[in-house]
Amino acid sequence: MLNFGPFSAPVHTLRMTARIIDGKAHAAALRAELKSSVAALAARGVQPGLAVIMVGDNPASRTYVRNKVRACEEAGVLSQLHEFPADADESALLARVRELNADPRIDGILVQLPLPPHIDEARVLAAVVPEKDVDGFHVHSAGALLIGAPHFVPCTPAGIMYLLEKEAIPIAGRHAVVVGRSNIVGKPMALLLLQKDATVTICHSKTPELAAHTRRADILVAAVGRTNLIGADMVKPGACVIDVGTNRQPDGKLRGDVDFEAVRAVAGSITPVPGGVGPMTVAMLVANTLHAAQQRKQY
Ligand code: NDP
Image (tube, rainbow, N blue to C red):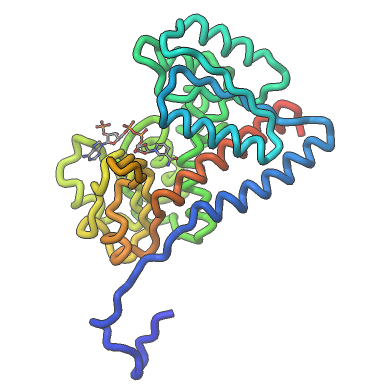
């Protein structure tokens, strides 16, 4: 607690550092809760099941898939990995999606992106039945979110909303700036913040004077994929800074879109990379799979 009383240090010697939002700890707590909900469901004879489809051998995708499968197994969720070679036919993939749509053991189907360029990503995602769309990428889920009646919310923005709630970050009436407008992070993130009554600005690669926008943010979400895009001079003092970016460095280390060391001296709270948003994405997938099982089995 800062003390500005008569015996406190002069203000110029105080260096503010942001509270670190520990996504790893929040995700572990959520996963423990989910595990007991899964056990309760299992006691009634229902084991939630997730099928992950992976095409090719992209090392980053392989790591993400491994983390997702492991998290499901730890929570007691049945998980299946369906691997296809990089030159697989789109028709083979669609046939597998249809099989999984009809498989009663499977509650959630996840197609790991990106798919190779010869495969129409939109067509494959659209083939998943909306009741099993645990990634929230189907147009049905996207539309439901747009009209304010979310069905499955994409895991990364859902995880960020969870962090904001747990960290008691005020949203209503605040100005949120989302940098990035992808269908899987930026756009759903902006919609979720809007639903919680933030005033939302969405920035992208064609936004002139990015810093003029980010400096007005009470909540700043960076979802771009560029190391250190957000510097300290782009952040309002005391802001909550959420770093979604995962940028692999030449030395193998993972860095975010935010210059963490510089920005933590200005922000009020900040997520680190790694250990911030990433673990929440995985936990939310388990949550969505459990939710899908509960919905389908009417529990
Ligand atoms: P995309 O590449 O789909 O989207 C990136 C967005 O950033 C685009 O909207 C693009 O604008 C915008 N952009 C690019 N350059 C700039 C710039 N200089 N200034 C402002 N905006 C810019 O990426 P994703 O949304 O899929 O992912 C974003 C990042 O988040 C990546 O690093 C990814 O690895 C990471 N990620 C992390 C996850 C996690 O769990 N931690 C989960 C998902 C993603 P435009 O639309 O104009 O091209």
